Length: 142
Picture 1 (spheres, rainbow, N blue to C red):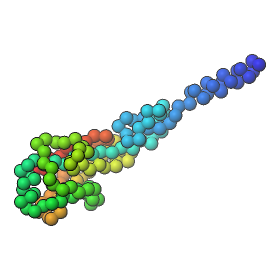
Picture 2 (picture 1 turned 90 degrees about the horizontal axis):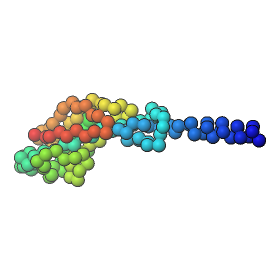
Picture 3 (picture 1 turned 135 degrees about the vertical axis):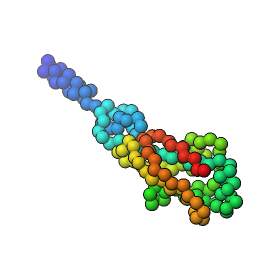
Picture 4 (picture 1 turned 60 degrees about the vertical axis):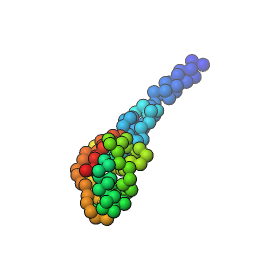
């Protein structure tokens, strides 16, 4: 009987000491609150919200621009109808905002070239920015 009790105690101890593996970084899109041990599976995203004031909206409208397109290097990542000017930067993903999201794989930061251009060819905005995991960068178009 003692032998069975001892074996059960060892088995119970072994089962409770096992930690569930998963992503333990709260900045990751696949974060698991249940994970007790990190298994290096974390995946990250970074976001940019582009915004513009009323004067830019008026300028775009007077030039007949009815669509803006955004890309990272040469990869098209979204379009936006320029009809929602704001006086300050909106939150990423806000209704009417021009938000793009970048899959950064297992990198917590990523340097990217972005390009926002008027589809009709009147102008463009471009720069190099550092995306950070689970963060939103607000970029004003002016």
